[in-house]
Image (cartoon, rainbow, N blue to C red):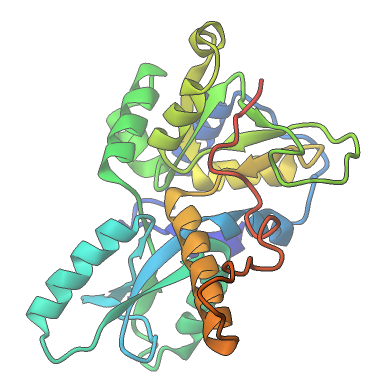
Length: 291
């Protein structure tokens, strides 16, 4: 799994040394074995992260701005736009002449970008790391859940970099909720959530009797991707983040403005609809997970 490490490699040197803690997070949280055959190639599994944008601080030309720490260059990848915006304000106050901005990049694409940046480093004595920065509340909730399962503080610190939430038994999405209009019989996909709030919102849409039967769980993102790859079938989907839905909406609005500018209309004419609008968003924000 060398390809996956640039996403969430921790700044701490001890993080990747404790493989036993990683394995414990997998077995304790997912309660699943390791099948002999893999369901999909690693590259296909990473594509599931396309609905998870990360926000990166860059200069005016879009070049990422890592933070120098001794022999390490740290490039934070923020899961939440609001958190990244707060960091941008701090950076601009400290460097008024720096024309910094935020760039949103899908998490799977950022993996490729990090590899490119590592190769482009002129100072080979430095190491570039790109930790994914989650919501502190999610980290706190993940720690609580794992402690309830018997993990120690050290095991959690060493084994949990990016918390991903799900339920036992799993919530699922039907083919129609995933945007599949073919009508072909396809089994529902089991759902992972990048935030605890998204998980709770999905549970809240279910009947109270079903809500009571679901137990929130958490695992590290690396463990989740391994499970996706090693499952006998392509059974899983990662639910889009709230910022993903907002970016999709902004893109549609921009497309509509560009269309209006290119083709001026009289006030009596209705606004045009973007072609392919229904298919550009693979999962509805209001999709109701089904058991």
